[in-house]
Amino acid sequence: MDLSSRIRRRQQSGDETQVVLDYHAISPVAHVDEPTGRGSVLERLLDYVDPVFGSRIPPNSYVWGPPGSGKSAVITALFTRMSRSRSLSDSLIHTSTRGGTSTTPKLVYVDARDASTEFRLHRSVLDGVLEESVPEHGVGTDTLRTRLDEYLAPHNHSVLVAVDHVDERGTQSLAAIADSFEAFGGSLSWIAVGRQSPSALAEAPRPPEHIEVPAYREPVLVDILTTRASAGLARQAVEHEQLRRIAAWSDGNAHDALCVLFAAADEAATEGASRLRERDLHTAMDAIPRPCVPLGRILALSDNRQLVLRHLIAVDDDERASVDAAATTIAGASSVDLSAGTVKRLLYELAEAGVAERVTTDRLLEGSGRSPSRLEPRFPTRVFRRLYDLAHA
DNA sequence: GATCCACGGGAATACACGGATG
DNA sequence: CATCCGTGTATTCCCGTGGATC
Image (cartoon, rainbow, N blue to C red; front, side):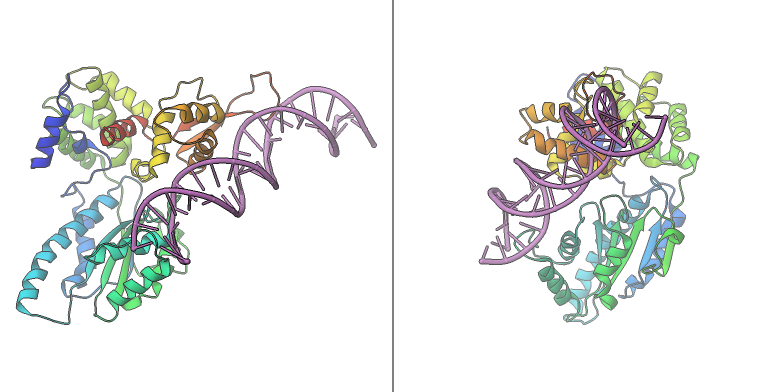
């Protein structure tokens, strides 16, 4: 166990219960250093990135698979590991061969959920490649492109960019990514990571290499849950049989499985139980919508949007009966510094983005006019609430 | 002075429903 | 009976403004 998780344990175990020792360790949005049960995918990825070890960049590629199959986990693990070990060897090379022309490619991981615009995409890449800080304001997209070009071309530098979560709602498409990077041709390659099968992609920018990440098989999912539970929960807090049932329920989706484990543990913890009870499991499963908007998407939303969501899930049923009423209530909260009109617009936008679903209530009010609708969250609210509160404590 | 982007706010459009019209 | 119309809401769309930087 590393120091930071030891510290977190001490911080978080101050209150009445000990079921959860470290929320971070069971968080669906946290990735571990060593992904469990993805050996063959890692092998394929290593084959693919092999040119990097010879200071060249591989062709563009597309990594794809269903939600919760560990795409992000595998890519982030690979990139952080490779960058770590190579910055070591780089420094060795620099001391021995001063001014050598052949430089090893940089590896940059970009989450398209954060880099939702052309500007941010370029900014993220530049930030990953340069030592100095890259401005977030006051400079145009063209300027950033120029700076990236100045980094790459004249110095024989190269970079391999992984763009995670392409073609999601609210993120750039594979085609847009390909388009953005096209001009950097020989010195920038990219790995796009998405869900759609390659055959469903548009013809035009289809990358030459495809690597599939299949859904987890059930026993592997049990292993993952076991690892996480032993890192974040008290000993004996959960039975193997319970983990097996979560795995069976989640249908190969590690995100959903971890959400159930997290929510059940949180439920047990808040009720002061010493272990996960059956009803904790059931409550947790019932509270995960299916399909479920990944938590990572929620946590990538702007601060105010998350704030609005945090309040939305706390609003009483009767105040949630219409978008208008919910907006008024939320805007009235002291911690919210937005007008009711803006909250309303944000709520509609969130619904449009699939984060919540508008359910038109059957007209039972006497008034005329179009019937209002109720907002039903489509994300794991319990997990979001806990993670949000921990982050804003 | 420039840039990006979140906010605010209001105009435009969609929908529900009852009653009038052809 | 089918359609149209008026009224009242709900929802979508759009654009100017201002903050935070460079």
